[in-house]
Amino acid sequence: MKNIKIILLFCYFCANLFSQTEKIVENQERINSLFDKIISAKNDTVSLICNDSIKLVLDDILQKENSFFVDFENVTHLGKITSSDRQVNIFTWNIPLEDRTLFNGFIQLADGTLFTLESKTSFKPLENNQYGTTNWYGALYYGIVPFKNVAKETCYALAGWSIYKPDTNVKVIDILSFDEENIPVLGLPQFEVKDEDGNKKDFLKSRIVFEYDSQTVMYLEYNTQKKRFEFDHLSPMKVIDGKIISYATDLSIDGYKFKKDKWFYLDDLKFKNRHY
Image 1 (cartoon, helix red, strand yellow):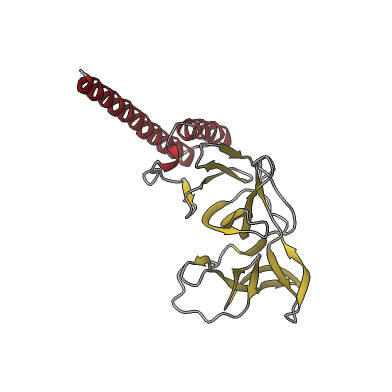
Image 2: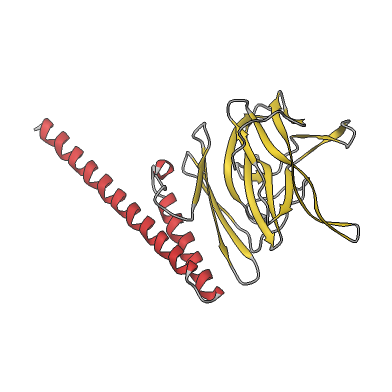
């Protein structure tokens, strides 16, 4: 009798797991369908309605138990990054509107806690400001690197891309940390600053912001072998009446490497086999 109960319990567990998996797959397919509708939408009203539905469906998936390890590779137009310590997932996506680009996001912790990143319109973040989940600047994050700050708390360096006006793009290296109530905060003074002569400043930046011409590309990646961020050095590209309009790479590479309690600036790195 005991063995029969165990078998029945196992069958119930398997059936429940199968049902949950089937529901998640169904919702992922629904998200893909909603993205397709946004791509073919004739006006912002349709796009915004579909986008709200995507947020609701994704929220439903991420609220479920064990959803932290759900595979989203088959969901197009949705970015997901997972920290190497398996403690944080970040989901981001964007939709084009007539007069702006709308960014959306979720931060999911391994314990099931879920936060929504809210942005009514994208903007260029300031290098020394902190932003929370309700005043997010908007970005597609594609890199995440855990590290310990001076207080031995785990923080995450993020690499992201954004756009807030047609003629330039923005990339950022930002810091995700958590306050005393475990609420996400973007922007933590961790980046060494140097002047044009290479002299160190007596303050740290909260994030690094790059703005470059939209007709060009900019390299910004974390090199896992050398344990450093590497990026194109930008120089003026378009200058009108003495005013710099946009920047582009000058083919030299700089970087940031974490040592002890901050990210140290590295200039003019030797670099081979650059990939965009």
